[in-house]
Length: 231
Image (cartoon, rainbow, N blue to C red):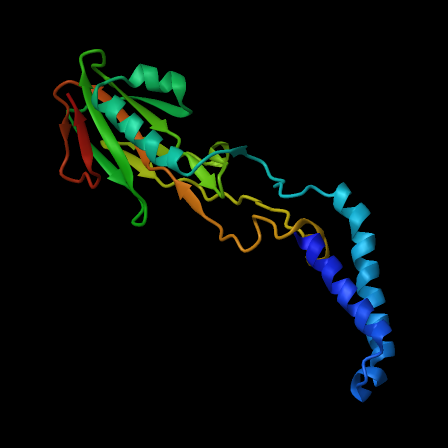
């Protein structure tokens, strides 16, 4: 379609130039118009071999193709499975980080050490552990313009100090994300790229931490996170 429009425009210009329209302004500028037309036509012609050497409507970046919906779907899947106590199955299928701490006190405070940061904490009391706390972190999905950058996400940090389990926000990560869009000359031949004018979008899953603690362990008053108990 774009090529057809160009041919029509070229035909009209050639027709009127040969016709010699009886207009003083056009006649006086016909030489300049001719050179302008020839220059533009030269650019289009030279763009043809270049166009075949460049990727058309492709993206060059480090990631895998994915849809933004997978973020929401994974969050729901993990939450449902955790409430059912299916932690082992989730660990096998998802990227996780694991911590284990020796702990002998009867009271534990769980503290989040950042204001603009939220982590959902699931708590399971188990008879398997009597003097130990196990923490499992599930890496969230990160989708940028339908590309999956989940492997670039940094984990949260978990530390045990005295009777407090401290949770720190992840370190920030810089992602170099680039796209190729056809320039104006090549778009004359191929039409407008589907990516031209497209706004950028991103979606990131929630931060989830699953704790296994000894049965009867009391959660202290200094706890400042929302705790979801797993029965």
